[in-house]
Image 1 (cartoon, rainbow, N blue to C red):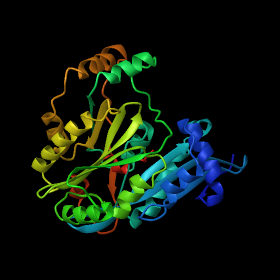
Image 2 (image 1 turned 60 degrees about the horizontal axis):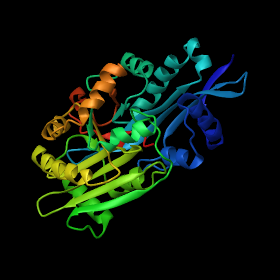
Image 3 (image 1 turned 90 degrees about the vertical axis):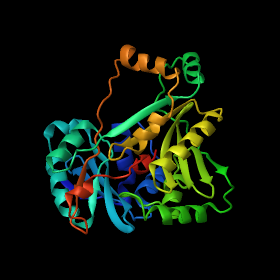
Image 4 (image 1 turned 45 degrees about the vertical axis):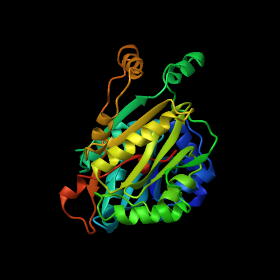
Length: 352
């Protein structure tokens, strides 16, 4: 066995996708790969492949997706670890931890900070050992909106939603409140106000929103704007599987809990009117109380009771902590306190 690590090239795309399918059991097209790794407004991703030269085979991959963040109006550059993969036949050889440790030392200086979203437990433990902060975890709330969530699964012989979304891609744009004549101008104007008041959060200029949702070859769901004289913003809900949608992003101005509560209550009432949304998933890190306060304001109906019973008693599906590792780089941010108090939504997820 002769192992080398080198930067990935376009010639590796097919083999990287092959490894991706082996690890995730999901097919990924070249179009989907290029959208994720080569089209971000923050620049192309940084990727390394681990090659067994004796077999002439790519047996591992480590990648960083760049993201622009803002804090108090200042633009920062961050990197998200993504597609950490090692062929199962090589995992027992314990070659990967040393590789990521060396790579971290080489690219840490290029970014203000580096983070992971969730990731498999071994990767999270590895990053904790490399110095990543594991203070914050993801909070998830499921809200069943219709009895159809259960009946559709009974008749289809599925009791709990599967992690398989339909391949059809469709973006539905809906305007609550006043109509928005030009979406790009609306997003730019709203974000210009939000970024001055928000916590540390991913940048959401039009080019970022367009790439993440409108150019995304995986995306199917709704982009919902709200435009009034006092409150402006948007919510994105993505189709996860039949009848199940997730709030992918939520931005509102003024950036305050009162504005969030106001907008979210209107959003829930509107979503309930959509015939194809039977359950809504909310996810956010515990940095702030935004989502916890919002979810407390939403009266979870008796429709959630069967889901709780099924998950807890029948499937023995106990709540598992999912951390969001973060580590400072060596650019403008030097205070460790900057690793806390972020405003994070699934905007930073892989996007599929």
